[in-house]
Amino acid sequence: MTDISTLPLPPDADAPDEVIWQGRFITTRKRGRWEYVSRARGIRAAVILAVDAEDHVILVDQYRVPLGKRCIELPAGLVGDHDDSADEDASVAAARELEEETGFHAGRMENLGEFYSSPGMVSESFTLFRAHDLVKVGEGGGVDSEDIVVHRVPLAGIEQAIAAWRTQGYAIDVKLLMLLGARLLG
Image 1 (cartoon, rainbow, N blue to C red):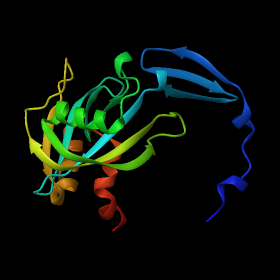
Image 2: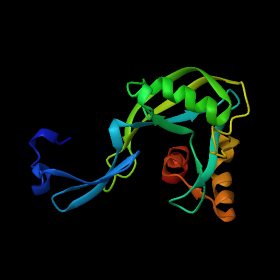
Image 3: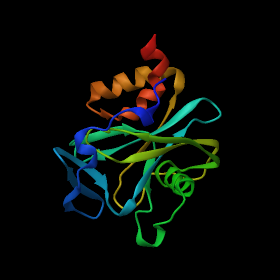
């Protein structure tokens, strides 16, 4: 394995970082010849892999404006997105978001690490949590006008479910690849 500290940095790595535009949740930036988007104000994300005792994965779908359609996703939410919660622990946010979006309470949240979804154009990372000891405590659906639909899908049938959703016109979040990993590798 290559020692990362011995690799040369590209020319733009040391260029100054310039803010082009900043909104409440995102910032567009430029560094050298690269343009990219980052989360504003240090906001982070938490994504939850929730599989219940009967080997069903808990998924959500909601309308995503940038895509112009509904998207099938793992439950997720922002960490520290309110001024009064800027120093919020990611596991607390993950537990809250799981319950708000799906109606499931996790007895324990396991931190599986930090991941980057589209590192060529977005600096955002997310912390992936595995929810354990799930108990249904509500209907879910999110808060305000999120209009989240909850899906409880047998892991053994995830490939067929995703194919059916695609046929119906849903977008499929890239993080669902983790559920298809073994099937994709043959």
